Picture 1 (spheres, helix red, strand yellow):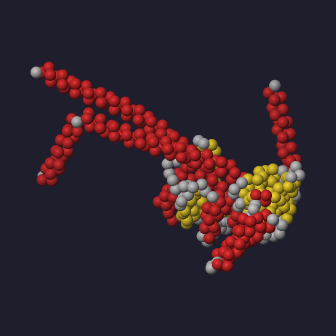
Picture 2: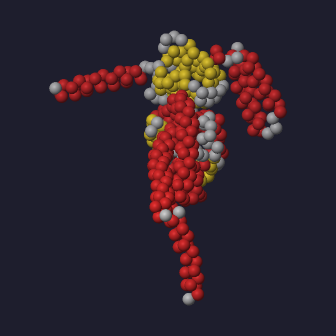
Picture 3: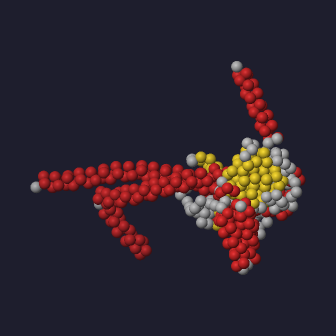
Amino acid sequence: MAAIRSMSRLLFSRSLQTTARRGYADQMNFTFAAGNQVFYNAMSVKQVDVPSFSGSFGILPAHVPTLAVLKPGVVTVYEDSGKVNKIFVSSGTVTINDDSSVQILAEEAHPVENLDVNAARDILTKAQSQLSSAGTDQARAEAAIAIEVGEALVKAAE
Amino acid sequence: MFVRFGNFGSFVPLLVQNGQQQQQRGMATLKSISMRLKSVKNIQKITQSMKMVSAAKYARAERDLKAVRPIGDGATQFYEKAEIQPVQDIPQKLVIAISSDRGLCGAVHTSVARYIRGELAKDDQNIKVVCVGDKSRAILQRLYGKTIIMACNEIGRLPPTFIDASKLADAILKSEYKFSAGQIVYNKFRSVVSYNTSILPVFSLASVTAAPKLSVYDSLDDEVIQSYLEFSLASLLFYAMKEGACSEQSSRMTAMDNASKNAGEMIDKLTLTFNRTRQAVITRELIEIISGASAL
């Protein structure tokens, strides 16, 4: 009796393992977390488009492993159900590992439909005035970053 | 001879005083017991309200922590999957202690400091410490004050934010301290009654570029890795601070709960002795009156 039980447990655990392995091979294990909210946690999705400093690129399952730094812009997630989710990110990182797991960590992220065009324009003009009044190099660099984010915000909100 | 006499002289009034106290014992202790009772009751009120405050803070910290866990997991994944090891020719290491400014929360801060003390006892030449929160600094600075390169406070009053973490990461990167690898020592929250003192690894650019598995990763240059590491340091710190804050609040909650319970026990005992003493005083006075009356 005990032998049968242990064997059935063995079979059961093996079948679990194989499904898990198959799951990893042709699927993306996608995590998208921001400081304010978690959008995806180890979910499977079809495709993710990300803006990075080395150019925007799309990630499909089994993408070559790489690292990238996010540029302010819109991350587009194509879910398995066919739903397209657009999320604005200010900055962050993308990691693609060799087991096809993808992590996007953002400082702050919001769905594009929650953005307000007028508020975004306000931020941009504020950043521009900040740049013209900036005295030191550091303040100028900070204002330049604020303008970059503002421009991307306006573009995403429109 | 004189000296001895003088000594004796000062000793006599002391003895007399003691005798007087002994005589008035019943009355004096009634007063002193009631004073103690009052102060213990006040302490219980304080610990109870501290417990309520930290319960509210804990509820919020746990909610926040759930949202932050994927960030911490995601940030550590790369280090694990790329199998990065510290390079041997740079022995310098960095230890970041995550604690807070406030005490009365069990062994949260001491367990972080104890771990670091253990590391420093092995090798105090090549390890530098960054203290986050006054408590870890206060514990470590007496023995290992020279190893502390940076300390920050105003941690723990408000929940930590990503901006706090990025400021800290920025300060660490600007400190010009060259290290090959580092550890973030923090308390990982497990449940309301337990936490584990754990470490998160941190690596420098040199260690990452020296990793043999890095060649698997496509199209990387040093600048990308550097900015990647900077952001990842900030997110790891953010995650560790959130875990630390949650463990601290939960631990303070249990500590204050225990303190209120102990104060309750003390109040019970003190009330009992207070009542007994009062009864004894009444009985004694009665005896005095009765025996006085019967003597007439």
